[in-house]
Length: 139
Length: 139
DNA sequence: AGCAGGCATGCAACAACAGTGCAAAGTTCA
DNA sequence: TGAACTTTGCACTGTTGTTGCATGCCTGCT
Ligand SMILES: [Mn+2]
Ligand SMILES: [Mn+2]
Ligand SMILES: [Zn+2]
Ligand SMILES: [Zn+2]
Image (cartoon, rainbow over all chains, first blue to last red; front, side):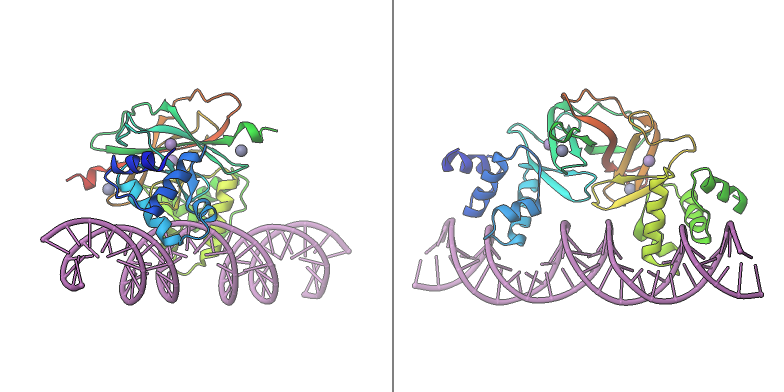
């Protein structure tokens, strides 16, 4: 993906493109799985952790990435689709966390079934993570 | 609930009843919502954090409590029903996390719909948390 | 009663992660 | 050029989760 295309992706979400942000976006695009802040940190070794943290925060606030809380206990991030508005329930999907390799996968084709919540519980977001064993870790 | 009844509840799960464990169990029974380690810590102020942590761990390993990972990022615990075996998908249920008061509710009557996962992804556990606003926080 | 072994508890310490404050550097625009 | 604003880097803090080790307590045996 060209720099121009990366810049456009950021601008489409009203994120001012900086060198740092382009690097982070490029890394995110290259990943099959959701990543943690530590993953990002060990890939972009010359960047500061705080900056990476704030970059992901900005991305999330502008709907460019979504957050997943899996059984590993720490936050993972993955790119949203271009047309995603992170709204419930249409733009939410199931995730899978492998307890062996600790990778977290997005299943964008598995949308969240709408839940019949008790009165006055107003949903805005869903964190649906199936834990188990992934194909590469199957024994 | 009498001490005898609490002891029986522990013994039914093959947990040796100690004074500490009875206190923790009693607290858990009294809670409407899932609790965090810190909640427990601030209730049982004279007990050590590590002991409480290990007590919850023991309870979890013996299927007395289940764990929830909500958007707060930290682990919460709630009692399982007596007949619960924490197996997928029958004994799993939906949870609700209120982003205002940060409480996490169990919805035991809302069971998890079975998901049609891609080949060779083997599920063992589900963490399904709906985030939003609870009745007491509705504006 | 005395003692050995095993389990539970408490204390100390550590690692990882999340988050904040502030100052320096860079960018935008008049 | 220079002011105003944004972004980045550094230092530091707080919380949670977790482990190691020593001590205490309970149990069962002699
Ligand atoms: Mn995803
Ligand atoms: Mn529950
Ligand atoms: Zn795996
Ligand atoms: Zn609430």
